[in-house]
Image 1: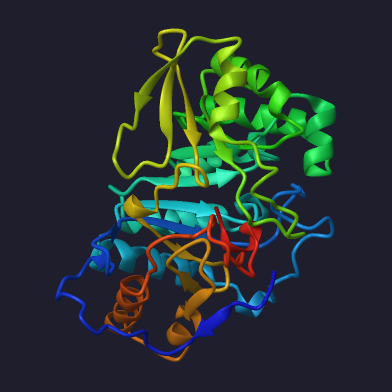
Image 2 (image 1 turned 90 degrees about the horizontal axis):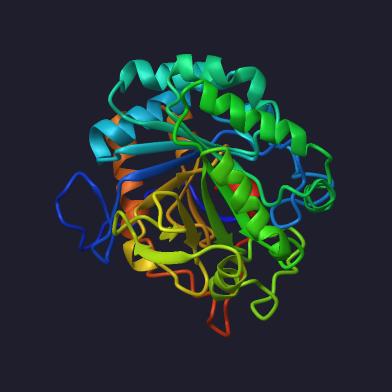
Length: 347
């Protein structure tokens, strides 16, 4: 998981305008909150986690249900957040996930609550999660080839993931979005995955692989680009560029065979969208992160447990986002990947 740079004190607010929202020095405003609730996962995807899993976070260092609800409510009521997504690790690994959702939904009934999941076991909990207040799910699925899935995730659980997707749709967690990381070994099956998603009425989005793997084997020269994917999909489907539905949305969309179905591509590396990023992140152990690729963190857990009131927590949060950097700099010669992997930060 690595040892990130942690600053438990207050970040600088020098030059910040007097506004409650999470504005940064480049004029971006964070309205999308990603909350990681665990480092544990039921899969071991090669681009995300080491084979043995991440080092466990001691139970007393994880944010509790009450602390998560408090911070989510604070983000919405005082900091202008308008969307909340729960991530992991794998959020289904927390038995109290329904309590977290119910607590947030009771206080914030008009705020959409979403979850990113690998789908393993979702078929058994989808209805309960919907009843607790969950509105949408994004399910990670990189291939519908069973052998390819088992090799990439180090687990033979494709059937469980597909059953989870169907259960989510049946429970009303729509639209179900499927996220697929572009990998060299699964590129030949990309069209099959799109065909499966079209048949299941899911919205598929491909994501360029980012340097967030535990083994630090990512190389810019080896990654599959959005352009390569479009060539592969274009051999089977007619794709018509449809742009972005929202300027801050990361996915560029293409109509498939004239629509209305679409496929999205999140070209994080080759067509970066840092200049419109609207996200703020909270890790499972209570650290604020302004960017996936920055190791600068601010400790909200310590602040909460030291008796900080909401006004002080809000000040720390505003300062953390005020100091957000311009972009990830993946193409820079001196780029250094973050210490935490994707599984430890939260998607």
